[in-house]
Amino acid sequence: MHFKNTEYLKEWAELNAIALILGIFAGLGAIVFGKMIELSKHFFGIIFQRGFQDALSIIVIPAIGGAIVGPIIYKYCSESKGHGVPEVMYAVMANKSNIRKRVAFFKTIVSSITIGSGGSAGREGPIAQIGASIGSTFGQFFNFDEKKKRILVVSGLSSGVAAAFNTPLGGTIFGLELILTNFSPISVIPIALSSVISVSIARTILGPESAIKVATFTFNPAEIPFYMLLGAVMGIVSFFYIKGFYFIEDSFDKIKIPFYIKPAIGGFLTGLVGFSFVGYGVLGGGFEGMNAALSGQIGLTLLILLFFAKFFATSFTLGSGASGGIFSPSLYLGAMLGGALGIIFDNFVPNVISSPPAYALIGMGAFFASVAKVPLTCIIMIPEMSSDYSMIPTLMLSVFVSYGISALFLGRSSIYLEKLNKKISTTKYFSKDLSDVAAMDIMTEDIISMDPDIPLKKFWDYVKKYKKLGFPVIKDGQLIGMMSNSKVKNIDSKKIPFLKVRDAMSPPIYVYPYDKVPKVLSIMDEIQCGRVLVINPSSKETLGIITKSDILKAYRIAKNIGDDEDKFKISGEFEEEISHISQKIHDKLKWPKIK
Image (cartoon, rainbow, N blue to C red):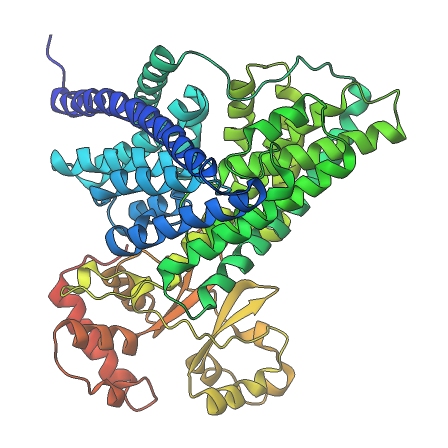
């Protein structure tokens, strides 16, 4: 029998075979990482026993861990700093899914030391980055194109998370929902295959034990409004959690001391927070605290205190530059807040609430769904982690409410995308070939915007004051249009006093941060405009603006023409010259025009 798509099937069979092998490596990687954390805990436990008083050691040991990982990150592998997941997203979006081979090794080392010494962080981020690094290494070794490398990176990420938490389906959905958002069914096969294999390896060696221990909860239909209220609270709190987390991280960034010292300071502050709550999971991943909340062993006041303690401990650990994940701490926060709400609801309507600890379990999924914007992952992964699937209808209700409320505050942004936005906006590099330069690398971040309700006659005041000929029109943080001098020139001067900016603005023309310069030029030439905006693909936030003078400046830097670009700045006199030069660049790069 002759198949028309033999070559196509052969390629995908090869990719699936490699994904299978990748699943084995990811499963073994998750096991090694777990054992490294245990070894680190044992090592620092020996230090505990050799001379430190208990309270002092609890404060000092996380600082020692930070003092060890800081120089390693600084000197050998800067990508191993922080969560891990945003770094994978960045590699996929902006670096053609290429991750340095050393990342898997150093992420294993620094994250195991951070968590083992008491740093408030989880395993999910590190093992996701470790698995993704292995997948990228496979893709580079076999010289795959960018699409196949991306699938292997997501396969590695998903299989690592799946093996670490014993959640094959949840791990698969996590990678698809977070990174490979636009996928075909055939792309799912290698990701699911690697996840199943990695979990099988982990279960064979470690056993099928669930990550969290829960009793089987009953459900009273009269509780539906309370689970909806739980979701609403989680959505609101997630906004303040993300903003607070990055406020602390930004505060560490502003401290004028060498980076490699900061994790030690963060570790010391983490120890200060955690020494009053030993045994409740404020230090480390936090599963002992979650299990205590799920079994109803923690009272209302302590649940609230543990919520705030874990928030600060996690922010100090990761905000200072140490290495670890945000998944487990977020589950912990959801469990504490959910458990507290369950007790409060039970005090008000004791005959309605069937089990207050059930709210801790549902809170875990609802909180992380709103923090990370991965609702489907939480609906699947929490039941897998607890081996209790009876909760799914209730969990769906709370998750979708929390997700919707969070979206009102953050749009599509999340704790991962906030980090990614910072990374994109601070990355500045130039290739010798403009076809490899991304929009984010040449955009101007200092944007002067106009309100749509400003009288149109004030447009020329803006031009005179800011020395620009075009401005984005933004209302309530959302980009709604573009106002340019050419647009105003075409309006009857007698009508201008009676018009507002919204009456004359053009639809916004924009690109995404990782779109390449030739595409930007194609859009400019096709629409005959002199500037385009750069927006975040998820939140639609305006990140910057690109004019043809920015492209010319990039071209001159790339070709080492000189540093005399000032005379080419956009103005009424030089706009035609810039347009002519940009067309030459466009023709030289031979980039097809957009149809």
